[in-house]
Length: 125
Image (tube, rainbow, N blue to C red):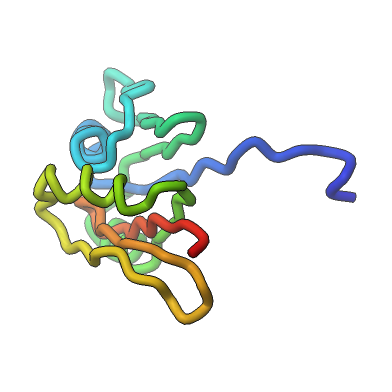
């Protein structure tokens, strides 16, 4: 079945406290580009090369807290250490974990976004 179609990307939709500040975080600390921010703050999209992350406002603080504890996604890259150096130079105000090679052969670093979603950036070792 997988031979009959091709996937070009998967775009997570992340609930955040404020879509404008979420986009600003991804632009400043993860080298994304702002693609779209609705004037009313109801939706936003930030892109990294041909991939994107979409943002919507969380229904309330409880929903945001619940989502943040259970939301993560992986960005697969080449030249992970070069990307990490770019991220590190921005001095993210959130928790980060520098690159390390996992026992299963993946090299990765972690960064929490400003709303608590875990972004895992990885490459094959």
